[in-house]
Image 1 (cartoon, rainbow, N blue to C red):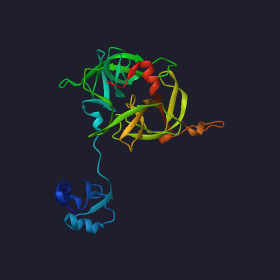
Image 2 (image 1 turned 135 degrees about the horizontal axis):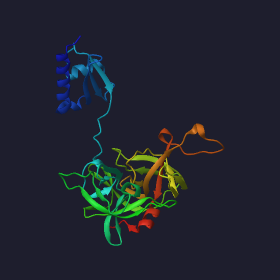
Image 3 (image 1 turned 45 degrees about the horizontal axis):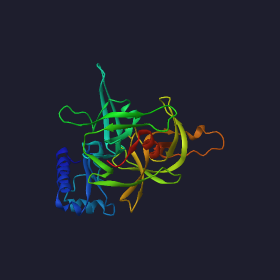
Image 4 (image 1 turned 120 degrees about the vertical axis):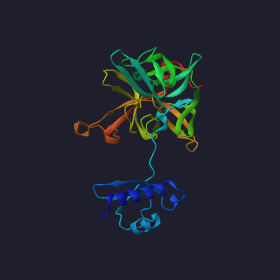
Length: 310
């Protein structure tokens, strides 16, 4: 049985290999000591190589037990959740309200930069910011850094309304017609439309490292939310979503994925339980039986009175 010192030495060797120039010979993406099996776990994508070959390439002691698992490079937490300027669609935004004995923080996603009656700012979900006059931060309020990005000046979130949206007047640098694509890349919004049944759509939410993809299942849908409000003229789609994605831009791609058409704003989701379905119905079911709710962009633009050119 290998000693702890031998295991630590092997793990140290592998870690140095991973960080070195020879790592392309055998791409290793993971290494750790598993005390339950008294072995070093090594993650690699080269499953065609035998453990013996990998051990030889890594120059490891034969006495050290190794377990090779298939894996890919790890993903960093979404840069969308870090401080970013200019402000573009897909970034994490939040509110910070000091209510005396408690502090209330809400997370959401920036939809897109916009202009409202000549005032520059951005759009997000109404239920994220709740009311006019609220300060908004990107990503969070920070006493040591200036993360303030604007003040809410318009909220539309009426029961039986067609949208759940807000406009935030912002003094920050704004990325006109831009949506987050990757740490060093942005999508360009080249046109606007409303979701159509069968369209493949993408949602760039702040809670996911990558955009989420799905298909528009139905349009002109009425949805009731847990807060008691009903929204009409919504769309439902099958992409995965999470709390904090509210406000995320929803779009389709064109020009080989370089550009996008802005279709709407993600505002929430609900779960359909197939076992409780009665009658001749065929609801769309995505991951974990969930559906995502999209407000068409035309509803948002009309209710807030915004245009994309800032």
